[in-house]
Length: 108
Image (tube, rainbow, N blue to C red; front, top):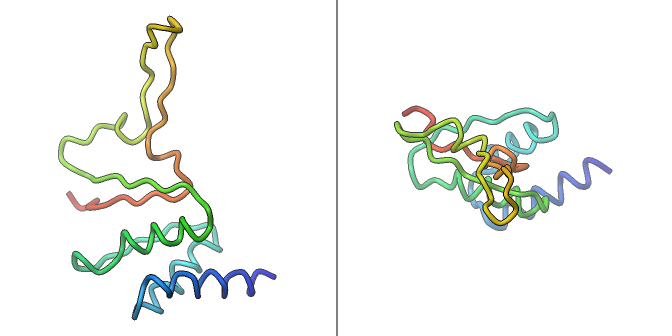
């Protein structure tokens, strides 16, 4: 069952990502092991597209965080803000609450 699902998922991803079979396999292994994945490559090689494609194939939510020198923790975790209509504080979740999160340019 798991092998069939993984094979179907791999084929779906290969329709979008061409020529990166090893990267696709490693990404699927990391996902099946409930782990994290660190991809290092030159710009324009499909890292974001791979993450988006995996999320879309699984029906998961996807967010991307662009790491910049001025990034604040609340930019990732979310914030409480005051809703004037309801007259109470409400939580606006940040991108960390996505099922698949792409942290881009973490070397900054």
